[in-house]
Amino acid sequence: MRFLVDECLYAHIVDHLRRAGHDVSWVRDGLSSADDSVVLQVANSERRILMSEDRDFGEHVFRDKRPALGVVSVRVSEFDLDPDAMGAYVAAKVAVLGDRLHGQFTVIEPGGERLRPLPIRLP
Image (cartoon, rainbow, N blue to C red; front, side):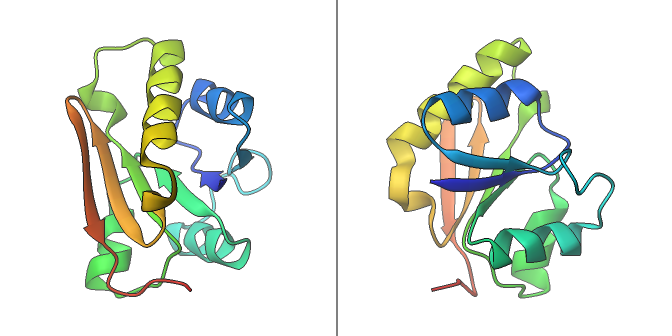
């Protein structure tokens, strides 16, 4: 899978996803401090699922009806895991969810995940 990981998430998450074979771009590598709308636009133009801890992306796709291929919201602050364990946990969740991440707003939180269809999905 192809992901664009927001700068607010740990490098360990990026590393674990890459080790699992995913094509991962990280906002810190060229888009640091970019506005959320730019980050979402880049994810869409590169056909990547956006992964972030920033809850504002939910407002962008649901309230503002911005299209997306998929958005994964990782509630890092709600976990009691060190960064490496957090990276492993996220990579394991991605492996289980697989293609179900496309067209969904997915929340990864302690105890599991929640998926909600995006109102406007990229084909």
